[in-house]
Length: 611
Image (tube, rainbow, N blue to C red; front, side, top):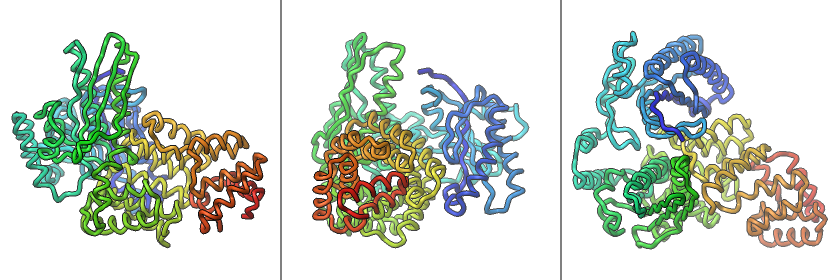
């Protein structure tokens, strides 16, 4: 893996989710026209696009001057394009440009250099450009158009505030007035001691305690157990990578690394809980020899001080040429195992304590946490409790993006699982997901919800892929989202592509729920490989949900095992009397391919269940 210093351009459409909601086909057509302009500008300037999902574009340039000149040309040409369109059809972009260090990962680029560019883009005014101070210094006197300083700004998940510059210059004042708690952050960045950093964090935590947050994760810098003290750079780098990747999960609040520097690796869980408000503590060790590397992790529930199921250990045959690749791979797997929505922390003592409270006494984040409990039980009671709690939360905290996206999930699950489905479930799910994006344009859960919704209402696979790729680009390490999007892509008829995403999720998280094997099970039925279909369902533990029982009965019958198929149909009739009335409903609700549904119908008819 190669490190290099490059200029990064990040661009995104203003209000894209709302435009898609109003007119999907028209919006996609306009976006295609805009992308022709954008791609042409980047290519002619010698830039390279390395990220392009939905409405976003990421490109690298060898010089800041080329990147900013391209950004200006893009905005001028897009403005001219909009002049010929009606007001509702116009597509306006924000652009951010940063000069920073990045790491090559195949054709992709990773690192703070990319993250800062994305944060600058979010700060830019509609139709404008926001650049970092380093870029401003590089372009000084070299371009005809000027940028004005908007002062120091605190950027999401970037520990040190940055001075930013804005075009057009007239927009600088409005950017400068945006509250970002810069004075506290700047004081720390200018040289506060470690003790002051810890005090500041605690003070900030208490003063903002009424704001909704995710489960608070304290990552204690990993301990180097190697004989060579020089190997500390690897353990420090691994800690930083894991911290940065965890920060991309919208359901987590990752305590800033600066706050953690004041604590030793042997600081007790009770101290970390009291001083930093930590809910969970992640520790680790790194031991390296000439050609071997071992990384261990320990995830602790800070309330009970009990150890939860932890990622790893990771044992690697090492050579120096792939050290950075190994570091990033381990970081991804650790982050996925901790942050994904089916992770152990959602089954912890804290989760159990929340579950035992009266629902109407829960605060905002507790309601969000409760919504994950449904995936442990799949009961109609837990579904209703979570929905009602989330509805109260978004009414009280209308800017709480995660609560809105969890509410969107809830309405989608009600339809998928035929649990107290509301007549307006589709409108409610779409509205909640769009509200989530209004509050936070970088909430991957909201794009995930829109992707799933698009499939459930029979929209095109292109629309699904647009939302799905945006969710994955924002957080490629959430194995749960990756697997769920994969299974819906498979259900759309793109079986192999969906299976590829699920396989990637399994690589990230070996403890991934076995239910995602259903894509492989159903694909085998479509292919007529019924032995393989039955082997896949066996690998899922038999799967006693109505949907799985129906498909298994069909596979048994189509495989000539009629007695076993009829026995399973009788069990389905006894255990799920409502589901037996229309056993193909869950497949239609997911808009699965007609050839699959016809195969299932044929098999169930053979098993004595006329559908």
